[in-house]
Image 1 (tube, rainbow, N blue to C red):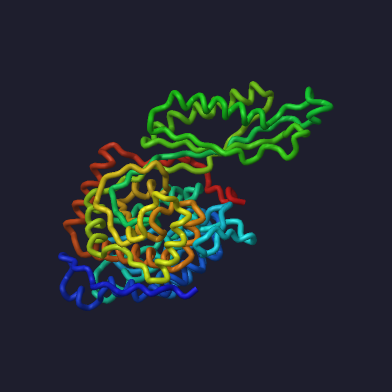
Image 2: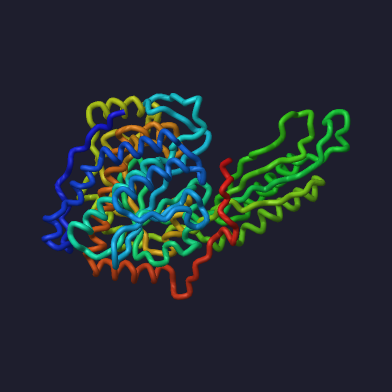
Length: 475
């Protein structure tokens, strides 16, 4: 597909950047000039749609592109084959850019605005991480060129971060100390709107609980069987009773991933996958033993055995107000996203599937005002933001009203509307990066606020314990 081109905007004025630097290299126009690359990389990763920790081709695409720009690439970091760090420059400040690239299982869709699953695929970019990786790649490249053109001291890094969807790739990278010497990190995420709020997420922990029983013929010899599925169902029943006795911020959800194959065979193995979330990571830690106790009680009551494996765990995001306000003001100056006539027609066709209350398509051209918000989702960016001041932005890569993890998100992530959104995010991150390199007052204020957010006695602790990355959790 040939992407629709985005008209370049005038360069954003940066009060603290040297005049010579502004005139020598226009970073906003430089991002627009990379739209073809951004679109091509995003589409290539969208086509591949690899799952967490299995993103070999997707990671290779990003590494090849960044290495060709003169970055030094270290791959396989933190014990993760698809994780990498690419760096260029000398001295400081050191600014990192996060790049994700994993897809979601069980959801596929073409780039058409009507439901059109692809039978030959088993996964899709329903959270737009193909756009995330491509937009961040462009941001890192343009910031490198700006540093080079202006002679500004500093280092730019692209962090290739696998398995955000339930694999907590960034947590292992944080735990390994890969962000310890970074001064700031730039982050973004696909969305159906344009915003840069101070957004706090929930901490979470997940585990797979595996019950082992004894198989038998369910009709001829039921007395000889001990159903592993009974263990799972007993655990679920008790956890559902626990819900009544938790605080309002608590979220508990599960899915039975294995429950047997035939009704007339007592299953000797069953598995249930749990998530527990709360705004305070200490509340997650306090609730977790109750979940484990429910599993143990269910096993005792059903004559089965149970074991469990922690799969992932994330700390909440810690937004730094000074950084988020600056990013929000940059986004306001850039403005929203405009659609071509073809894109408007595509979006209108898509809108018919979004319900009567979906916002108007024109909302893609708006920028939401700065706000302080709480998200009930979770992300491994939270652990990064616990180690280094992190600033985030969201741009309209999807038709307004689109939910993440939907077929509509997959479709838009594979065509020009998504590519424009990634381009917009790259521009916002580049201009934020230029501001951080150029503005020592902003850097100092942000670091002061970050220290105050963490508190004097803060010590980073992951919710994963000492387990190794679950490289096969999506196999």
